[in-house]
Length: 292
Length: 206
Ligand code: SF4
Ligand code: SF4
Image 1 (cartoon, protein in one colour):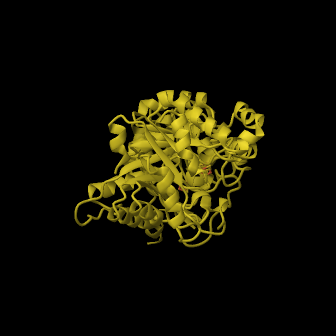
Image 2: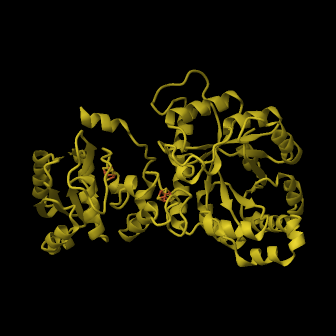
Image 3: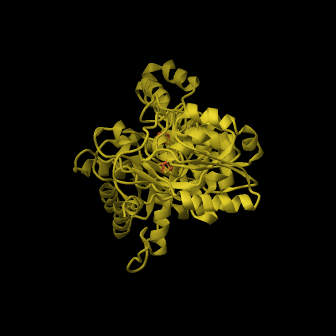
């Protein structure tokens, strides 16, 4: 089911992300997703996230779909040229997977195969354009597809707390121009920053889901704030995690912070995208606390 | 070896807003330059009164030489809205860095030919892509200044203005964004979706 249908009905759209395993045994992960994520609108499947090789996004999307979930096929331009990307999009259509999220992807040097060739034949913008071409019934070479063309809900990402905000907004506009119908954001820990970003981004008229990561402990958020692009963690969040060590260890503080960020951002956006990073079991609790 | 080919006449004419100062680089013998076509076109433009001056030189990729020589033409450059450079990609980048508040545009596309490169550029690099992007990027080559050679804007990896691949390298698209703002050409970021044509490398070898 296309998540764009939910946006157009004016619903506050909830998605979460799961990473495929480094291996091909998926039963446990699928069971976990069914238990904790079946109540939400869709589940993103990451594509060799952080340039670490795993089971393919498409393969795991199929497994989730067979398990009754609604997958979003994340597709990066790091590992495949335009022909391979187009083939995989057609395969997604074959499997009835109709949500895609188009990304450029991290550089190979950042991951566990630093010697691999970084492809980047296309990028997020030209990949969105490619999806639109397939929907018109043509491939990027201008050749006609046989039969009814595929149809996808086309998503993209943006970093609202980036220190390169002008460049990010310019890129967001290009993604909309190229066909992006919804956006999921990089993790937000500072609602104020997100709200002022939305002031500028709302001119594009495209739904935005605020990205939320559950803060697990001080070390994690410090590391992210210093090393992860587009992530900025205010001192108040760090202090809150420090305040009651037992509570933080039990995950309660993280759940409270995540739920609060959702509540604060909700009036300014059209949905939330939760990156649980292994804490999928906490997603229902967060949503309940956020009033969703 | 590399070769420069003129962009189409319509493209070049459309690049000039108001009047242009023209720079030709007949540089190194390793670069094939379309001298005859360039001269003809420049004569036409001059006859239409659209040129403040024409300056032909060599090795504009050498920043020191280039600065001294350009300073002699300061009045003509100031009188022009656009500086049109007929050279390989390295030459255009060198000029646009020096005249950083000026609209510096490339009139040629740079292709690779079998054989070695000419003068090895110190600060700028050109991959001879055959479809020069410098006019969309404020004279900064996105293929060599961005670790992923992105042609549609910044990825999500820049942190504190630095590239995700190398924290000692400034993000190329951060530089491009800043330069475009400085020269009042942010509209270049609204150009159609760009898709690389790797077939160009084959074309040049024919
Ligand atoms: S875009 Fe870069 S690589 Fe391509 S011709 Fe221009 S300077 Fe050279
Ligand atoms: S951080 Fe900047 S230079 Fe590095 S790959 Fe991304 S856009 Fe290119």
